Image (cartoon, rainbow, N blue to C red; front, side, top):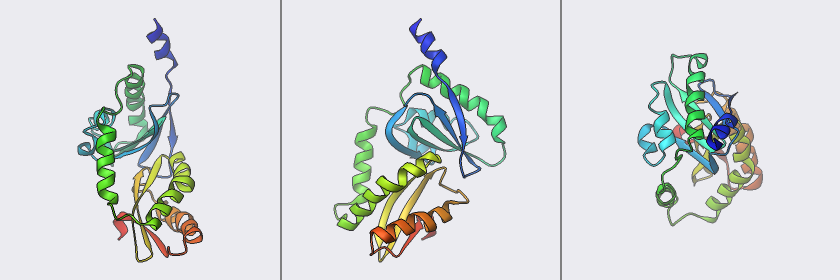
Length: 200
């Protein structure tokens, strides 16, 4: 009985993002507290059962999970109006049944990967830039269904990875140049420019 009442309370609604190929599916329940998880392909989702299940849909081309929402990036062809009901029904059932979003080993494997990527030679500037991004940039970008991650700082150039709705978004260049680059230049004089990972 309790589960039936809980099931009635789960709601999923959609929010459009600046990227026409990405859509936010927002739940009235936190599914991944304090998380920003980007899965560009099914191979990335081995330790993330929810993302892996979403990749079973032929129209899903990317999954981003954070706090109480999932951003789906679709393939070219199908329209959102055709896809939305199917994804909403799937997410409602998945959350209602309290299925695992992540495997028990997810955090350990993610930390190992992050440590390997950041390297032991991360500089004070790397850490300062990462902190500024986490504090000032990420919360705003999450509202649009996306995320950014610090990749490197070399010879005045900050390289960022774009995730979720930000990946492939027509307005991402404007966000990088007018928003993030301006902020980092003011706060870290050593920064000369900001580029997306695939622009290098």
